[in-house]
Every structure is written in structure tokens, then in C-alpha cells.
Image (cartoon, rainbow over all chains, first blue to last red; front, side):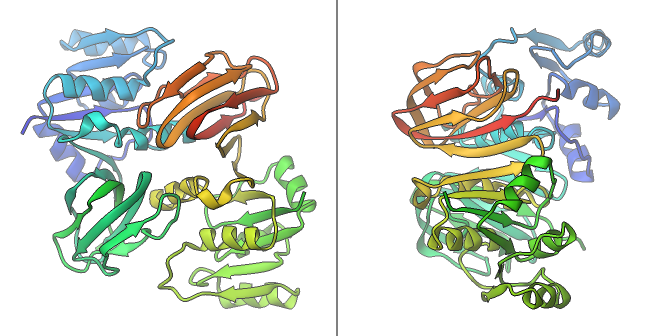
Length: 214
Length: 214
């Protein structure tokens, strides 16, 4: 499966999992200021994308010198740099995308990056935001929940109520239940048996898994 | 207008605006662990609400000694402590609610608190999350945007596409336009003339205003 890594301009926490994902990625895209963070990790992006208002000229020069393609967009554009990077990853055939540095910093950027997971265009593509011990991804019809017994799983409906939800391997089971848009009922479920699984008939769930230490 | 303050268990940043709002509030509710933060500021909650898994016994004793009502819920409940606090504020007639300490800490709690703003029950009630230089609130039909020229305004559709959006006093104007669910187009608009205003025909926008220094 063709995989892409996107390095955005938020907080970057490099775990062994992240290192392994970057090492085996087919495509590494730096979204603007994410380029400096990538270079600091010794990662060479294949692509630098954005309006480049937060990638200083020396960073651009360094990634270009190592052969990276640079796609510079005007500042008055409709997409954020991270959304552009995601769209390019899809255009280039990525079926699995990991977004790093997508959270932290300005609240609106953090929320916009989480909402990107709900883009209808992402149907059929596995997109995961990784942030330290937490990972976020959308569940459209069915998903296995990565994690071990004891890990926390929160399921938040986006885009309206989510209905016909069935879970397996979670402490608070749902058997055809509904999670109402806006209500926090799906917060802090717990994996009791791995792999846990969530299915739903209608709607979209944002899943956030918090790995427990140990 | 009857106003309530809810102090949740996330990051609490006390600005002069926050101080003034707490001073004039009709009802101060601490959501579980928020009670300790309230006491540390010298604020006496009227109500302590939650499963009390993060309000130590001495904190409970102190708020009770000062006359606060304590509403303890079982840990296996459908709502988060913050959602309970918000529902109680509504039940007790608050028409204006400020949520403090709603962000920071676990990502799922931060997101769940932001999504609370989309609860259909909040129609007609002004609920604002305050977090340092940032404030978040929902726009259902029309809202004035609090802020000064130069402040950033991000408009993010929740619950599906938002259509028929008209703006006044913003740098990137919308004249009957649509913001698509998941897409980040509404990020980083700028107030050019105060008070700025947003109207929409269908959908719900989450507005996040970032105050610029100066």
C-alpha cells in the first residue's frame, strides 16, 4: 500500500512508531514550516508545499539541494498548507497517510486539521493524525481500532448524528446505538480486547485513541 | 442576561476579561477537577458537578464549607463532567455561558468540549469557550464577531456544509458562499472593520477568534 507522511507545522513528537513510518514511507511531504522540523529530524522531504510564509529561504534551499520538489502557492488560497499537502498525497496515489505535527499551536489550525479527516474525498484512504500517545482517524463504515487493552478510545460524531453503531472489544459496548452530534457520550471508552472494532450504519465518527503507558 | 461560568479541568488562563466575567457571573460551576483551579484563583464555585474522580476530598470539603452545592454523578455516565455542567447551567436559566479550562490536556476532551458548542439544545444561548487569546463559539444564523481589526477569525463548518454565508467586516468576504465540511477554506480570515458580522442560511459554523497582540 502506497504510504505518505505529511509533516505540518504544529508540535512534532517523534516516537519509534513515527520513525518507522517515516523510514518506510513512499512519499514525504513537508507542509510549509514543517520542512524545518523534518530537516531537524534528518528526514529529507520529497516535496515542500505551501505558501512558504513559514519556511525560511535557507530551509527551502536545503530541501531543494537534496532534490525535493517545491510547490509554492499564493498566500490568498482556499486551502491551508496541510490541506494542500493532503490533496497532493491523494493525487499521487497514497492509500495510507500519516499526518505529523498537525496539532498544537493555534486552536483553529488544530481543529481544521482534525476536520480534514472528515473530507468526503478521503473515503477509501487511511488517514491518521499521530501526536505522541494519541492518534485520530475517521471511521466511515468500519474500522479496527489500533491499540492494546487499557488504551482509551473516544468516538465523536462529526457531521451530524452517527447511528447503527456496533462495537466489539470495548468496555462500554454499543449495539446498534446512536451517538448524538455535539454530545460527549462517546468519550473515554476502553479497549478490553484487541483488536477492538467499530462499525456504523450512518454518519462519521472521529476516533481518538490514547495509548496508556506500560 | 443571566450568565454562568463553567470551570473545566483543562488549561486555565486568567486574563482581565476572564476576571471581569467571573466577578459578574450569576452562577459559577466547577466541573470536577476545575474546582481546584477555581479555588486557586480565589473563586468560590456555587456548584461542583461531576463524578469527582479528579476533585480531591479536601477540595470538595472546601467548596462545601463555603456553601457550594455538590452534585456527584456515577463514573459510568453518558456525559463528560463539562457537558453535565453545561446542561445544569441551561436548566438553571443561563442565557450566556463562558467555558474556561475547556482546552488543553487530552485531545479527545478538547475536541469533545469544542463539539459541545454544536449541541442543538444550545440554540438561543450564547456559549463561548475562552482560552487565552482565543475564543470559540458557534454561529447558527447570525453573529457579531467580537474582536478588533487585525484579529484572526476562522470559520469551520460542523455538522455538514454551511451554505448561504454572508460576512461583513472581514478581509476575505463571503457573499452567499458555501464552506464545505472538512475543507479548511474558512481558516485565517481577518477582521477589517469592527464589529464584523457573519450570517448563514443553513448549517452551523464554529468560529474561532484569535486576538492579535497590541
